[in-house]
Every structure is written in C-alpha cells, then in structure tokens.
Length: 138
Length: 432
View 1 (cartoon, helix red, strand yellow):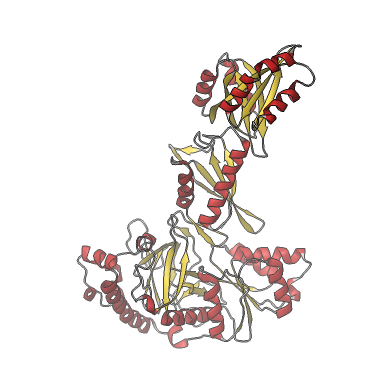
View 2 (cartoon, each protein chain N blue to C red):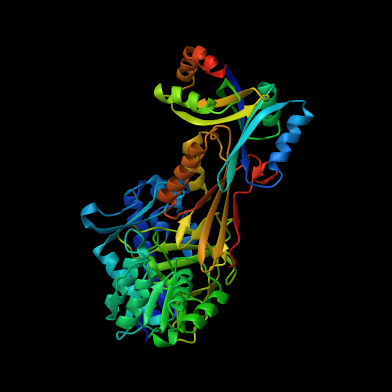
C-alpha cells in the first residue's frame, strides 16, 4: 500500500521531539510508527500517522519544516526470515532503498515501511510478488 | 629614519599647495576619461575648472564601491590597457570583485609610500622582512614586498599560511620584521608556544600589522607575546593598497601619505565635512594615480584626523585607528565580507528570501565564521544525505564567493530571531 509519510526537520535540541509529539497528540492524531534519522547537528523525524494531511497542516502552522513523502507499507509476518525474504526480492529486482523501518502489529503481523528510490517501480514489484510474499507469510 | 623628509615634514601650506596642483590635474583627468564621473559632475553643474585648490574638494561628487562594480572590470581606468602593468582585486559586495589597475608610475609611487611606511615603523635596510600577507590579487603581499625591496631591506616572500614553516624561516633566516594580519600574529605566537620556541630566541623586532581592525589591547598582547613593536598599517586596494597610512614608532595614529592620498572626514548621514578633529567617515581622493585615480572615495571606515605635528617630526596628517564602519562590511581573517554576499549565495540556491544568521567568534586568535541557515521547505529533503549535500553545497559556495570558510549549520525555520519583522543577520562576538 502506498501512503504519505510525514517528515519533520529537527535540530538536535532537547525538547523538540516532545513538542512534535505533543502537537500531534493534542490534535488527536495517532502515530503508528516513527523513526529518527540523525546527524550531529540535526535529525529528520519520520512519522506514519492516521491523518497525514492534517499532521502536515498543523505542523506547518507551527512553523516546522515538514513535508510528506510517498512510502510503501508492506505487510509481513512477524517471524524470523521475513525481512530477509522481502529484501531478497527487492534486491533481485534491482530496487534501491533509501531507508526502511518496521513496526509490529501483533504477535503474528508486522509492517515494513519502505522508502525506495523509485516508489512506482518498487510498488509494481511488490504487487507482482504479492502472492509469494503472502505464501511466505503463511 | 624619515624616507622622504621634504614631503613628510613639509609645512601645511607647502602640502596644501602640492595637493591643490595634483587635485586639479586629477579632476581634469577623470572628467575627460570617466563618463560616469563626468555625468555626476555635470548633474551638479560642476566643471573641472571650478576646482582650483584643496578647499574646493567638498564640491566634488563622491565615488562609491558600487561605481567600481558598475564599471567592472576596467571602466574606471584612465589609461589604455597597454599602460596598465598590474591588476589587483578585492571582494565586492555581491559577487563581482573590485578591480584596480596600476601603471608603471603607480607601482613606483606605491613602493615609495610603502617604503615610507616601513621607515615610520622603524624598519631599515639591514632588516629581514618576512611578508606573510597573501600574495596574489590581494594587495597586501605584493604591496609590502616591493616597498621592502625599494627600502633595500631583505624580503622573504613567504605569503600567507603554513604557520610552522613561517616559524622555521624566522629561526633559520633571522627574520627581524614580520608583516601579516594582527590576528595571524597572535596565532603565530600560539604555534610558537606549542613548538616550544620562545620569542626571545628569535630576532623579531617590528611587526607591520594591518588589513583588519584591532584594538590597543590586542597590540599589547602581541607585543608581549612576540616581543616586538606592533605597528598598525592601513590601506585599501581602491586607494592603492597597504601604505596609504602607517603608524610611526610613537604609535599615536597613522601618518597618511597625503601628498598622494588626500583625506577628508565626512558625516556619513549628511555627507557634509565634519568639524576639524571630529570622528566621521574617511574619504580619500587619490591625486597622483594614473591607472585608476579616484575622487572622494567613501572608505566606510570611521576615524578622525589629527593635524598636530608628531613627536617623530613628521607633519603628515595622522588618522586614528579605525573605530568601525559606516556600512555592514565585516573583516574576517583579513578578508572583506559583506552579508549581502551570503544572501546572494543562498538566494541562488532557493530563489526565495533566505533566513540566515552569521556569527563571528574569535576562537583563540582566529576569527571563526558560523553560518546558521534556516531549513525552509524548499530546502527540506526527507533524506539525510540530501540535507548533508545541501550543507556541503552551501559551505563550498560560501568559501568560493567569500574567500573564507564558514561552518554551516542547518536550523529549524523561525529559530533565527526577527526584530520588527526583519531578521538580525550578523552577530559579531569579537571585541574590538
């Protein structure tokens, strides 16, 4: 599934992450997953939320540098070998990944958040291998 | 020793008469060769014949740095290029540099005034002068170089940088005079200490320091750390380069070589001359140059003139150490930097008004430039490697445009303080 991920530019200062969390919490926006990519001076907070448009609007209003990025959500089983299986397919198909993170839904299911260099190409690959991915999941 | 006693100790009347004759000639030269200045004169109904003596100078229009930029590169030269034997340039306010050209006579005059300056500082022909100003388009290196040769002293043309090598040469060659920026002099002292070399073991006697503002406190510090007499030299390429004025060993103001560079002090707001002895903006007219003579050039340096005779015997008018600027130019490690240059670099990358803050610190003895740039949406990429690439791109562009390196830091939007809607662009934490 292709969805909008919300990215926020953050300086490495204490309290900044809290502020974003609070703004979204107060607005009733639920965060399903997030990751922080950081350097010595700054970081990029990436969020999967239930209402990305609203999250974007509200953070922009609060003067954050924010943008949305297309990412792919790939359902997977929550068991050993699932990640390697997915990466194997993508690698064989020549898909370059900018970054990737994951969250678990419950004891059986997990979701990979994939940001490929070419979203559409990756999406079609995943569609093509849907059955195989599903069979592995079972 | 006084190099040119006849001139340097002339009476005020003699000097004014010489200046008047030269000014009249220069006005005519410029009027007939530089259309842009002729237009300015015609706008006020002024003819060359109206200028008869130094008293008339305040009737003439000013020349600004922007006039040099508008006539880039050679439009202000009053001789054909075949007569120009050397070019120098300094940084402009927005990208294009300010270009100056010298005829053979100009170079001879420049050497003479630098030689006078060296003599004022107490340098003589037995000295070994290490020139650690940059050689190249910057006037510092070559200016000091030829003045030293003209004096008959020995010049070591080492140019800037390579600090350990500089100190080795001082040891091996017995350098007695060092010429560099005052902040670099302090850096030399630091490195010497690290290398375990005491200044007492060296031959240093005199330091010729210029190209950036420095305080009396800094002078005392340099004199204590390097055990030499620290002399302030002043100059700017638009006028000639170093040697426009220089302190004598009494260190009570810089003697202006006013037979070539006629000084005035004006109020930078009203543009009217100030009363004798008052502080204002220094304005120079070059009255003997051929390549690029310039009338009433606004230096933007704030100072005052002292017409009393100096204890050294010279009657040449003195200017006090510059107290600041009437524009926003900064001098970083001897390099002129205008905030507008930074703005134009950032504009090229984003096409919208950039928000930035420039912080200048003196860390140890060296100026450090820190540039904070707000990450506006048009800059913001979701990928770290693109943000790092952006930071590197800004760093490189700043280095190549300004000629000095800056530490670039990306910050969140609206973190840079706005005062009355407009951002404060520069914080200079150095103490002058």
